[in-house]
Image (cartoon, rainbow, N blue to C red; front, side, top):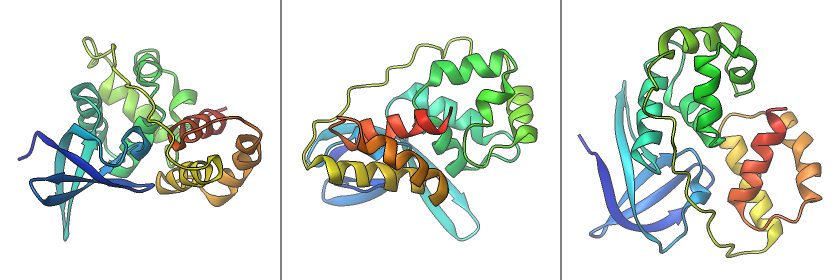
Length: 196
């Protein structure tokens, strides 16, 4: 129904953003909300998904990211939340490489993706990314608050992606030793640590 929203980012939370389009705020669930800044004018590509009693908008930085999301949710056992968790790492080249090279280990590092589901992803999606390998991942937003708040926001985003409190506490101490400035950087670094 919707292809994209052009508007102002009015709210950024650990699991979603709100895009103000002509005075109407659209709640959009995204893989990494901290790629966006409050009061930033932008275009967000969206996909509306209606299930049972729920309607939700899922947002993407560009069309490539949206297309990969649509491929992922076509796989049995992958819902929108799992697909967003996979996209959150923003290593889309690595994801495509893993699918094309039967790398089950790479895929099982994502939350709630077991060996069986990883094999299903490879089976269903192998060969479908011929022209989608080049991804525009954008720039990290400018830090607006203190590093501690940014760290907490990054950890909250990991929680919203489905990582357990135990997994998050493991990486928190390592992240506290870094000199990162934005929630986006903390989220990316946390995802890298969790994927080891």
